[in-house]
Image 1 (cartoon, rainbow, N blue to C red):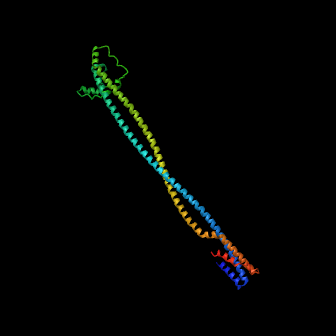
Image 2: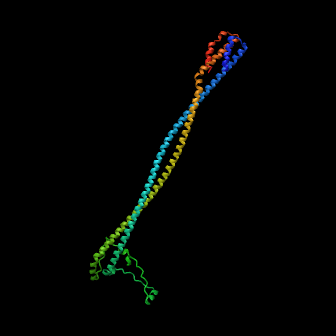
Length: 354
């Protein structure tokens, strides 16, 4: 530098004594100022380097912690997504199986109901046929118990029409069992109550009753068995329908709860996937920032390491230079020239040539 060049000039001037002392003293003063300014610059640069290294190190540690936290969060989020995926699949499978069980229960209930209707229709028809036969037998063996079909009463207009040779209008189908007018309640048999004894009046009735009693009793037992089977079937149908309705209500409630859980888990999974994307993006940004910071720290080392390593040596060298220049100035001002040691100056100058 120009300052170190001037030191050489000063030393040359002192050794050759070809330059005016006033000029040399001025040069010495300028060199002292330059050396002090260089020391101030080194101190500022040292402080700058220390601050930058400290800030960069803090930032590096923060970025490394952030990346570590993000890696942990990413791993936990992936695990949460996997768990949510399994839960969603399980819920969907459960809902599908529930729907299948509801369909099977409905199909079974329909089959049971159809079987019940067939039984009731078949047993009802059998009862009507037996009661019809029983009523016809009563016509011959128990006339008092026979229920004839109601006679048709003609209206005034119909009577006039028939009296003039017309055909009577068709007879309206009688009510009751098999068109006899006999109601089902009329023939209900209580198995706990014995039938009443026959009338004590006609012996002929007893004879006829003896002939028909076995058949009539068998008919009554058949009707009783049919009625018992119908009553049991009706009770079972009622219980089956009640159980089915309760099953449907329970299934509907469970399906609603599972559907809500499915919606919640799918929403949670979507949120975790969004968080995962955000975390991975943040990690990528932080990693790039850490790489750039590493490059900056490397440039700081290139810029500051030599200065920091030799700062004290350079500081001492400048102090020695200033001291030597002060002695040189003192010599020029009338002090002892032997105070100026050229070897000290040369040794100090070695660390100022960088």
